[in-house]
Structures are given as structure tokens and as C-alpha cells.
Length: 288
Image (cartoon, rainbow, N blue to C red; front, side, top):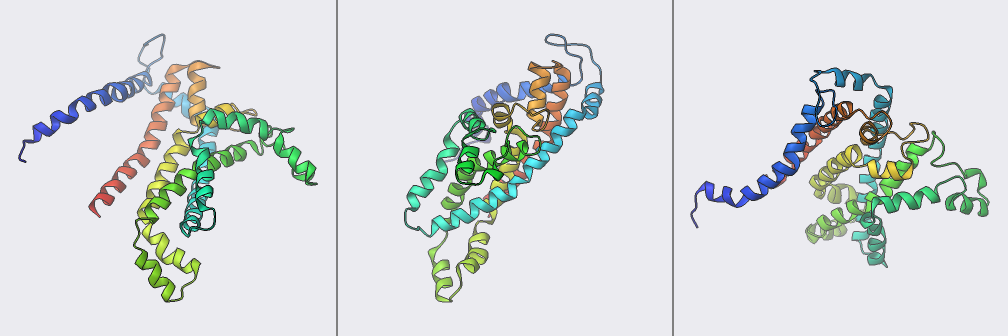
């Protein structure tokens, strides 16, 4: 059916209006706030002063470093999800139960995960009690109460929860791969690892890129819930991240909305790099 371009535009216009109102307007206001000394709903224009204060704040710099450390979990998350998905694709005995059990953490609410692990990983929590009863008391550590281990414990919890999404994503793609490729490899006598390296990974290349980019964005801008419930940024600032720093500037501690807005803009700019990369990837997928 022939129709003019503006007719298609009319169909998407209501959704575009909602998106602009819900997301566009707040973004514009955040940029405006970042250049003002906020008193109430507005304030005098101060130029780049908020950005200078933010970039000189040692806690903000520490939060960036912690987000960078959390990003180290992305390669491990992708590799673990890919390997487990490849194993489940072989349909070992009980594979449906394993797939269900692995995916369950992903559908649980982040506050629920945080509260449970805050009790489990404390100095006298369940994990340490199990280690002590198993004769491994020397491994019992203050997982979330020690500045040395708290951030890595938080990272482990995030990876554990997000793992199920990657596995299901890769499994869905593997189910669309032609079985003839694997049959030919089996006839040629290739080992499981060779099949994994030369067939499975190349077939999942675009999906791996997609999952990695999504995970990077999540580790940059979606870890507030984990940190807030699990450690509240402590002990001290050992698990301080960008989102929590922004929250503290608005709702707690110093209450400086202008600096919070400047920090939000910087976080948005950092995340936008990966968002545009994701859009470019989706365009490439569509072309292929």
C-alpha cells in the first residue's frame, strides 16, 4: 500500500511526544541545573563552577575509579555466560532445571538481592558460618565490612544476578544456528573446544558485542540499587559509585543539586558513548 511519509510519522508521533516529555525535558533541565547554583527550583547562573567542583572532589574521582573496577567484571560476565550457554546448548541431563535455576536471580528485585546478601556476606553471616563448619575458617572474611573486599563482593553479586540474562540471550541465538555446522564439525572429528572456538563464538559474535555493550552501560549507570542496599557506599567510601555520589548530593550529606546535576551530565556523557555504539551495532545487525 502506498502512503506518504507523514502518514507514518503520525503513527509514531504520540509515542515521540511521551518520550520527549518523560525523558527529553528532564535532560534539558539537568543540563540547565548543572550551570546554576540551585536554590529551590532554580538559581543564579555560575557557568562551569559546578563542573570544576565536581572534578576536584576526591570522592567523585574515587567513585569513577570504583565504576572502572566494576567494569572489569564485564569480560568475566560475558565469558561465563557464553561458556555456560554453550554447555546448556548440548542439553546435558537436567539442562532445563539448570537453565531455570540460573535465570531465577535475574528476575528477582535488586533490593531483595541486596538485603539477602547483606546478611549472608557479613562477618557473622551464613557464608562464614558454613566455611567455619567446613573447617575452612581461615577463608571467613568480613566480605562487605572490609574496605579491601567490599567492592569485589558487590561485583560478585552483580555478576551472579546478571549472568542469567546473558545465558538466555546466547541460548536463544544458538538455537537459530544451523545444526548442519555442528554436524559437519562432528563428522570432521573436531573436539568440543574447537567447535566452541571456531563455530559457536563466530556465530555469536554480534550477540556478544550487544551483551558486552549492554553490560557496560549497566555497570556504569545501573548499579545504584546494589550498592545502596548492600553497602550504602561503605565502609567509608570503599564502594562509592557515580550514581550513589549523585544521590548523596541531592538527598543526603551536602545537598548540592547543582553539583549533582553536573555529575549527572558527566555520567550521561560517558554512558552516551556506549549507547551510540549500541545503536551503531543495531544498524549493522539490521544491514546483515
